[in-house]
Amino acid sequence: DAIFIMTSNLASDEIAEYGMQLRAEAEKITRQKYEGQPEDLEITETITISRRFKEKIVRPILKNHFQRDEFLGRINEIVYFVPFSRSELLKLVRMELDKWSKQAREKHNIELKWDPIILDVLADGYNVYYGARSIKHEVERRLVNQLAMAYESGHITEGCTVYIYTDIPMSEAEKAKLQDSPSPIKIRVKAKGTDSFTDVDPGEQLKMNEKK
Image 1: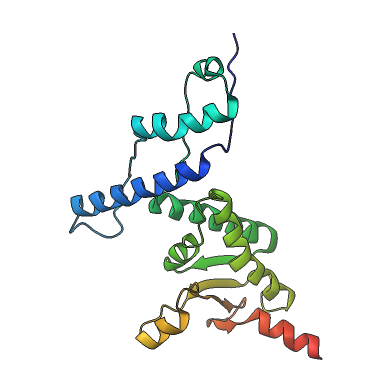
Image 2: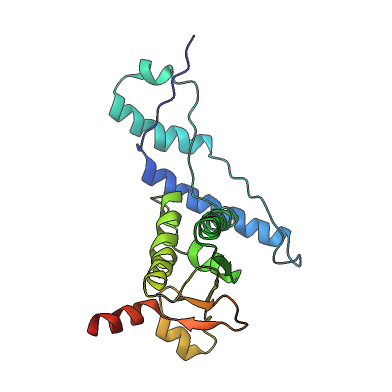
């Protein structure tokens, strides 16, 4: 006997859009259910793909592609990959940060610490059509590249501590200035043997070095 596992992007857009609707509905129900509970309470949201969606939306797309009902009839089960919930996204971001933190500690003796709000800021970069990869790319693009530049410019050295944070806009003017732009991720560095942190702008420092 053998088990065959097949993957396909057929109906992926339809599944993603439907999954987002289900997530929104599940989140609304969950908020009502746990109203008044602590904000950091970890809640697991379960969503179910309806039979109607499978029969009316997904199956016609599969049939149009494969043409043969006999082939589709031999598929015992279809597993649907739906968009991540907010809590799942935060876990993915935390896993990425933990991975880079471990690497910085083991390879360069550098401690990475971050404000908890950073998890939310990076999770906002999630793209439903690219899945978990979009979180990985967001962490690398917005944070790891910045750390690499700071290391290159000499701001980050072995034995130091790096604190990652963001400025949350408080006034209406600040919010209007950001508009749909993501909150900027910033870093502070505490050199080995010192007690205070210093704000670092690696991009600006590299520009200054290039002018010299």
